Image (cartoon, rainbow, N blue to C red):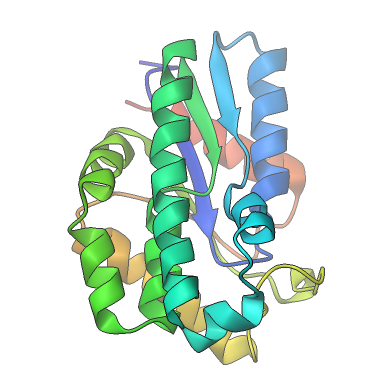
Length: 198
């Protein structure tokens, strides 16, 4: 039934997620889709208050891994708070900090996150939702001074692959917005077409 599923826009950095979330939210408002709430990217705000730098994340130090745990907990809190208002359109998801911990941290950190109560709840919400994985678009990669930047294209695509592997490992169905789809209108149309199915 239309409107029954929350929408999660996920993927590596600089893949158009925030723009897509904003555009989907605007389309839902315009089309009178009913009540919904958006969740903005949480990691950036936590990064600014946790005394963690993007270099710490790349190094995979203890503080950076604690940061990923904070992001996971914040995602759960936001979803629990906002789901009372209807469906959620989320910029990122519970799997995002796990993907970063998988690529940049020691294996036990990702394992701990995957075994956490917070992830168990978020995983079930994602299994019921529409997951949109944005593929990297080379022309969109830029350094805003805050976000973690990949060392090269190979690292960027490796993170994308980590997302795919984690989604498959955790039994979460997803749809890919391919790199060839760069039109904002077409990206929104793809998301809404998938959202209306079920």
